Amino acid sequence: MSCQRTRSSAWRLAEAEPAAAEVEAAQGQAAARTVASEAEAMRAVTARQKLVAKSLEALSREAAAAKERKDLERMIEGLAGRAAGPGGD
Image (cartoon, rainbow, N blue to C red; front, top):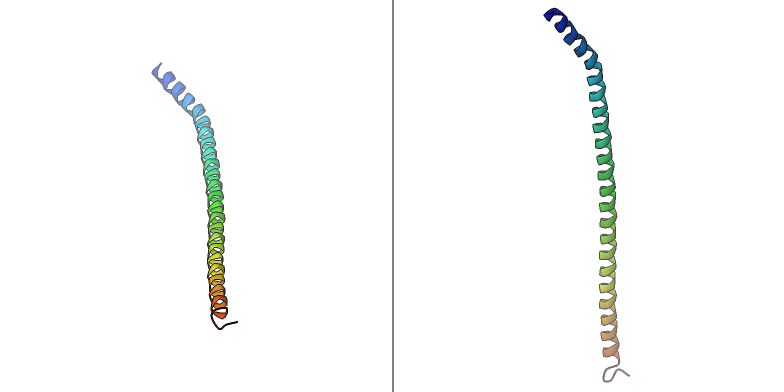
């Protein structure tokens, strides 16, 4: 009887192994999909970071141009004031 139990156990194990392999394969595929999804999310984050960096650079250039414009306006006003000063007419 113990020989029959052993064969029965071996038979059940032999039947279970393919199912276990299928489960492992499915888990591996799920893990691969998760990794791919996370990689895509990271690419999206990187793209957003690049857009933010470009926006900040544009704002910085805009601020520098505005400052330069104000400096030029002050310089022109100063020159105009000196030209219109006493004896400048």
